[in-house]
Image (cartoon, rainbow, N blue to C red; front, side, top):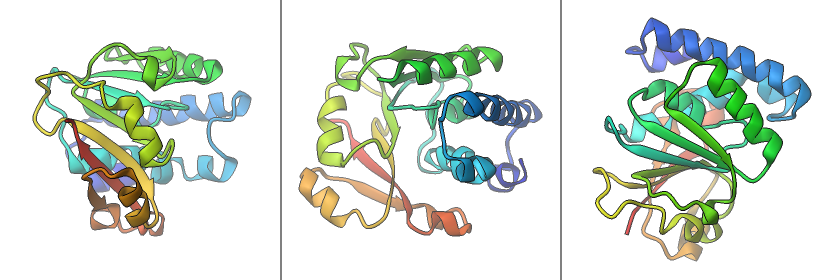
Length: 205
Protein backbone atom coordinates (compact mmCIF):
# COMPACT_ATOMS: atom_id res chain seq x y z
CA UNK A 1 0.00 0.00 0.00
CA UNK A 2 3.01 2.28 -0.56
CA UNK A 3 1.29 4.31 -3.29
CA UNK A 4 -1.73 5.01 -1.11
CA UNK A 5 0.48 6.07 1.79
CA UNK A 6 2.50 8.29 -0.53
CA UNK A 7 -0.51 10.15 -1.93
CA UNK A 8 -2.72 9.97 1.18
CA UNK A 9 -0.30 10.28 4.13
CA UNK A 10 -3.15 10.80 6.63
CA UNK A 11 -4.57 7.29 6.18
CA UNK A 12 -4.84 5.42 9.50
CA UNK A 13 -3.33 2.01 10.17
CA UNK A 14 -6.88 0.59 10.20
CA UNK A 15 -7.64 2.10 6.78
CA UNK A 16 -4.40 0.72 5.29
CA UNK A 17 -5.24 -2.69 6.74
CA UNK A 18 -8.69 -2.55 5.10
CA UNK A 19 -7.24 -1.53 1.72
CA UNK A 20 -4.85 -4.48 1.90
CA UNK A 21 -7.70 -6.79 2.87
CA UNK A 22 -9.82 -5.41 0.00
CA UNK A 23 -7.07 -6.26 -2.47
CA UNK A 24 -6.85 -9.82 -1.06
CA UNK A 25 -10.63 -10.31 -1.25
CA UNK A 26 -10.81 -8.75 -4.72
CA UNK A 27 -8.01 -10.97 -6.01
CA UNK A 28 -9.74 -14.12 -4.72
CA UNK A 29 -13.12 -13.05 -6.13
CA UNK A 30 -11.57 -12.16 -9.49
CA UNK A 31 -10.45 -15.78 -9.89
CA UNK A 32 -14.09 -16.89 -10.13
CA UNK A 33 -15.87 -13.74 -11.40
CA UNK A 34 -14.03 -11.61 -13.93
CA UNK A 35 -14.28 -8.20 -12.26
CA UNK A 36 -11.14 -6.71 -13.82
CA UNK A 37 -8.62 -7.92 -16.42
CA UNK A 38 -5.55 -9.92 -15.37
CA UNK A 39 -3.02 -7.14 -16.21
CA UNK A 40 -5.15 -4.69 -14.22
CA UNK A 41 -5.22 -7.10 -11.28
CA UNK A 42 -1.41 -7.09 -11.28
CA UNK A 43 -1.57 -3.28 -10.89
CA UNK A 44 -4.57 -3.23 -8.57
CA UNK A 45 -3.28 -0.59 -6.15
CA UNK A 46 -2.27 1.84 -8.90
CA UNK A 47 -5.11 1.34 -11.39
CA UNK A 48 -8.06 0.61 -9.13
CA UNK A 49 -7.54 1.64 -5.51
CA UNK A 50 -5.70 4.88 -6.28
CA UNK A 51 -7.97 5.63 -9.25
CA UNK A 52 -11.07 5.24 -7.06
CA UNK A 53 -9.56 7.46 -4.37
CA UNK A 54 -8.76 10.17 -6.94
CA UNK A 55 -12.28 11.45 -6.23
CA UNK A 56 -11.08 12.26 -2.69
CA UNK A 57 -8.52 14.66 -4.21
CA UNK A 58 -11.41 16.64 -5.76
CA UNK A 59 -14.11 16.46 -3.05
CA UNK A 60 -14.26 15.66 0.66
CA UNK A 61 -17.60 14.01 1.40
CA UNK A 62 -18.92 15.48 4.67
CA UNK A 63 -19.79 13.28 7.63
CA UNK A 64 -23.34 11.95 7.39
CA UNK A 65 -23.71 12.50 3.64
CA UNK A 66 -24.92 9.83 1.20
CA UNK A 67 -23.18 8.72 -2.01
CA UNK A 68 -24.57 6.63 -4.90
CA UNK A 69 -22.04 4.59 -6.92
CA UNK A 70 -23.56 3.74 -10.33
CA UNK A 71 -22.33 0.75 -12.36
CA UNK A 72 -20.04 -0.22 -9.49
CA UNK A 73 -18.95 -3.52 -11.10
CA UNK A 74 -16.64 -5.05 -8.53
CA UNK A 75 -17.24 -2.23 -6.05
CA UNK A 76 -15.17 0.52 -7.68
CA UNK A 77 -14.96 3.33 -6.75
CA UNK A 78 -17.47 2.74 -3.94
CA UNK A 79 -15.62 0.28 -1.68
CA UNK A 80 -12.30 2.20 -1.57
CA UNK A 81 -14.20 5.46 -0.96
CA UNK A 82 -16.19 3.81 1.84
CA UNK A 83 -12.89 2.92 3.55
CA UNK A 84 -11.64 6.48 3.00
CA UNK A 85 -14.87 8.05 4.37
CA UNK A 86 -16.15 5.72 7.14
CA UNK A 87 -18.76 8.26 8.34
CA UNK A 88 -20.40 8.55 4.90
CA UNK A 89 -23.10 6.18 3.61
CA UNK A 90 -22.46 4.50 0.24
CA UNK A 91 -25.06 2.73 -1.92
CA UNK A 92 -23.50 0.68 -4.74
CA UNK A 93 -25.64 -0.39 -7.70
CA UNK A 94 -25.01 -2.51 -10.77
CA UNK A 95 -27.33 -4.36 -13.14
CA UNK A 96 -25.26 -7.58 -12.99
CA UNK A 97 -26.28 -9.78 -10.06
CA UNK A 98 -23.08 -11.80 -9.64
CA UNK A 99 -21.05 -8.58 -9.37
CA UNK A 100 -23.35 -7.13 -6.73
CA UNK A 101 -23.22 -10.39 -4.76
CA UNK A 102 -19.41 -10.18 -4.89
CA UNK A 103 -19.57 -6.58 -3.65
CA UNK A 104 -21.92 -7.53 -0.81
CA UNK A 105 -19.59 -10.37 0.19
CA UNK A 106 -16.49 -8.12 0.16
CA UNK A 107 -18.22 -5.33 2.11
CA UNK A 108 -19.29 -7.88 4.75
CA UNK A 109 -15.82 -9.46 4.89
CA UNK A 110 -14.30 -6.02 5.53
CA UNK A 111 -16.99 -5.06 8.05
CA UNK A 112 -18.00 -1.98 6.06
CA UNK A 113 -21.32 -1.15 7.71
CA UNK A 114 -21.51 2.12 5.74
CA UNK A 115 -22.03 0.18 2.47
CA UNK A 116 -25.21 -1.20 0.92
CA UNK A 117 -25.32 -2.81 -2.53
CA UNK A 118 -28.24 -3.54 -4.83
CA UNK A 119 -28.78 -5.15 -8.22
CA UNK A 120 -30.65 -2.47 -10.15
CA UNK A 121 -30.26 0.18 -12.82
CA UNK A 122 -29.49 3.78 -11.88
CA UNK A 123 -32.77 5.06 -13.30
CA UNK A 124 -34.71 2.65 -11.06
CA UNK A 125 -33.11 3.81 -7.80
CA UNK A 126 -35.65 5.68 -5.69
CA UNK A 127 -33.54 7.01 -2.81
CA UNK A 128 -31.99 10.49 -2.92
CA UNK A 129 -28.28 11.23 -2.42
CA UNK A 130 -25.87 14.11 -1.87
CA UNK A 131 -23.34 12.81 -4.39
CA UNK A 132 -23.11 10.40 -7.32
CA UNK A 133 -19.83 8.71 -8.33
CA UNK A 134 -19.03 6.40 -11.22
CA UNK A 135 -16.20 5.06 -13.34
CA UNK A 136 -16.74 5.63 -17.09
CA UNK A 137 -19.98 3.66 -17.41
CA UNK A 138 -21.21 5.52 -20.51
CA UNK A 139 -20.88 8.79 -22.39
CA UNK A 140 -21.95 11.77 -20.29
CA UNK A 141 -24.98 12.55 -22.52
CA UNK A 142 -26.26 9.01 -21.93
CA UNK A 143 -25.28 8.72 -18.28
CA UNK A 144 -26.42 12.04 -16.82
CA UNK A 145 -30.19 11.61 -17.41
CA UNK A 146 -30.04 8.36 -15.40
CA UNK A 147 -28.93 10.20 -12.27
CA UNK A 148 -30.17 13.79 -12.78
CA UNK A 149 -33.08 13.29 -10.35
CA UNK A 150 -31.22 11.25 -7.73
CA UNK A 151 -30.13 14.24 -5.63
CA UNK A 152 -31.55 15.43 -2.32
CA UNK A 153 -33.33 18.80 -2.65
CA UNK A 154 -30.97 20.33 -0.08
CA UNK A 155 -27.75 18.41 -0.69
CA UNK A 156 -24.37 18.82 0.97
CA UNK A 157 -21.96 21.50 -0.35
CA UNK A 158 -20.46 20.46 -3.70
CA UNK A 159 -23.37 18.11 -4.41
CA UNK A 160 -23.34 16.56 -7.88
CA UNK A 161 -21.71 13.94 -10.07
CA UNK A 162 -18.01 13.02 -9.80
CA UNK A 163 -17.28 10.91 -12.89
CA UNK A 164 -13.95 9.16 -13.52
CA UNK A 165 -13.16 9.37 -17.24
CA UNK A 166 -10.15 9.26 -19.57
CA UNK A 167 -8.96 10.88 -22.79
CA UNK A 168 -10.01 14.11 -24.50
CA UNK A 169 -13.50 14.90 -23.25
CA UNK A 170 -14.09 18.16 -25.15
CA UNK A 171 -16.50 16.64 -27.67
CA UNK A 172 -18.25 14.44 -25.11
CA UNK A 173 -18.94 17.36 -22.76
CA UNK A 174 -20.12 19.56 -25.65
CA UNK A 175 -22.44 16.76 -26.82
CA UNK A 176 -23.98 16.49 -23.34
CA UNK A 177 -24.79 20.22 -23.17
CA UNK A 178 -23.82 20.10 -19.49
CA UNK A 179 -21.72 22.58 -17.59
CA UNK A 180 -18.83 20.42 -16.38
CA UNK A 181 -15.60 21.07 -14.51
CA UNK A 182 -12.73 18.76 -15.46
CA UNK A 183 -9.81 18.02 -13.13
CA UNK A 184 -6.72 16.29 -14.54
CA UNK A 185 -5.51 13.50 -12.25
CA UNK A 186 -1.95 14.11 -13.48
CA UNK A 187 -2.14 17.16 -11.16
CA UNK A 188 -2.05 14.73 -8.23
CA UNK A 189 -0.47 11.47 -9.42
CA UNK A 190 2.81 11.13 -11.35
CA UNK A 191 2.25 7.57 -12.70
CA UNK A 192 1.94 7.27 -16.49
CA UNK A 193 -1.50 5.65 -16.10
CA UNK A 194 -2.86 9.03 -14.91
CA UNK A 195 -1.61 11.17 -17.80
CA UNK A 196 -5.04 11.12 -19.51
CA UNK A 197 -7.28 10.36 -16.50
CA UNK A 198 -9.75 12.93 -15.20
CA UNK A 199 -12.57 13.59 -12.76
CA UNK A 200 -15.56 15.31 -14.39
CA UNK A 201 -17.80 17.24 -11.98
CA UNK A 202 -21.38 18.17 -12.92
CA UNK A 203 -23.24 20.06 -10.21
CA UNK A 204 -26.71 18.91 -9.14
CA UNK A 205 -29.46 21.13 -10.57
